[in-house]
Image 1 (cartoon, rainbow, N blue to C red):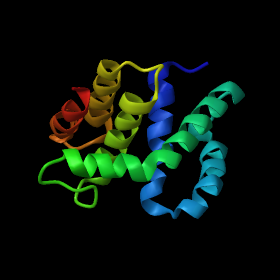
Image 2 (cartoon, helix red, strand yellow):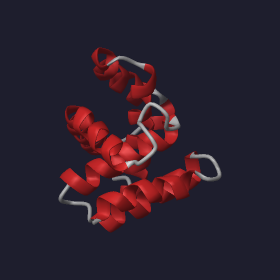
Image 3 (cartoon, one colour):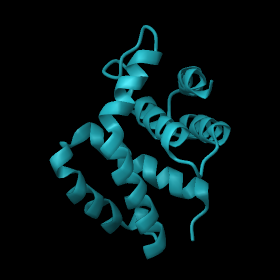
Amino acid sequence: MMSRRALREQLFKLLFRIEFNSMEEMQEQCGFFFEDSDNCAQDKDVEYIRGKFDKILEKLDEIDRLINEKAKGWTTERMGKVDLTIIRLAVYEILYDEEVPGGVAINEAVELAKKFGQEESYGFVNGILAKFAG
């Protein structure tokens, strides 16, 4: 079994594909994702990632609406794709995933932003997510 951080990284990489594919293509993209040797995971991990991915897709419009409401001066269309993907994942965890405490979701999002984002990404991500923590 992968660590929670490794699972979250895989989920982030899979969610990132939303930016380049239509919703109709995402189930197929999910299959391609796990066929890639870089993303190999045990069945249990694949099941966890896919399950969470499907739940996020279900709520994506609502998540984006909430981000647009709270991110003063920003819209999801203007955000960098990496930052937006990280924020979407964390907002899902904060609002809908009872297994993940809000503080943990924010800390993990900041770590993802440091690893995959631009230099100022983690500050931006943290600033947006702080508005969801209250």
